[in-house]
Length: 139
Image 1: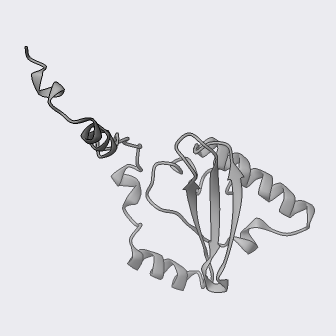
Image 2 (image 1 turned 180 degrees about the horizontal axis):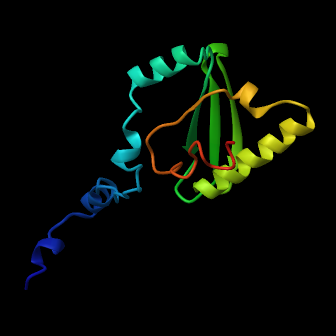
Image 3 (image 1 turned 60 degrees about the vertical axis):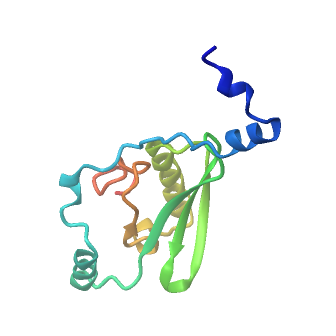
């Protein structure tokens, strides 16, 4: 019988076998290498010096659990302040919609988006590939 080895496993060890199985790996689409040409830390420092930018915002996404809601965080590093927007899913279209809504609220309060967010830094993850400088949400 080919399945004899399964019958010899003790019941308390079956739980451990299931518990320690490796997780499924998901590959998210990243940003193409051609788009990362001038995205090093040295380039960032040169850009902030050239345009005299003294504060910037670091943007990222925090996932509660796979398939659930997501928080898009904005970390104002020079002020040690973090804010977030709750999103229904981890898509670039959802992120763009939230940024458009934020811009609309700032306009109502007679504030400019570019004054509060002069420079936004993101990671190289695949969750924000559509939010680039030419995206209407960021202009």
